[in-house]
Image 1: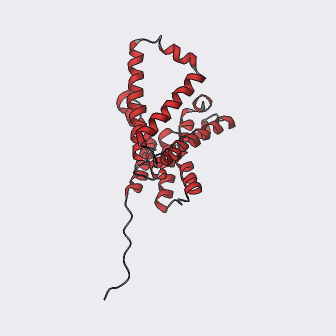
Image 2: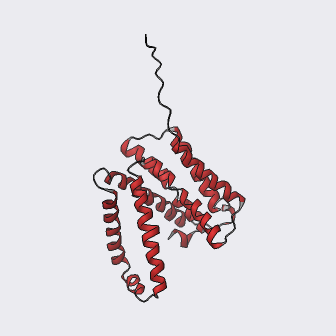
Image 3: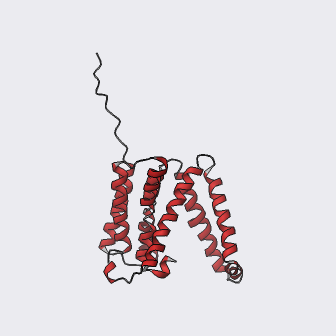
Length: 213
């Protein structure tokens, strides 16, 4: 919905406000106050996403308040997947969580869009093959790895790391589709990678200041 109401770049960036919502939710719900590394990383990652998607050129874009609200809601609901998934992983295996999440999502879509399901059966075999690749590689494998990663990372760190998605998408568009990458987009990609590296740096162990005899 956001893409139909806003420029694609702006809609994409609003989707990647998810780490901000995740940080706020973990702080409010679990009293996990973000440390300095996470705060710096989420800011750097968001700025990087703005540059990668080209949303910095907002002056030339036609925006509307309803579209912005829908876009922010995308970031909010995307962030909630991380929050709810992290909580569910305390009791269930990552693939169990994903199976139930996608299962209920399928039922919901069948109820809301029954016509779209019937239309799929009329598509040619080539469309089905691409759909299978989209489901297996991009959806099941992608979300499966992300959900598994939630078991080893905090919700905030996992959400920030996921901002690599638009950077990788831009790189693939350059390599496979021949799209031109502007220097500003390259800088944005570097910033997102830096934000992930900031999270990867381990904290130094506390030094024992008490002298021993």
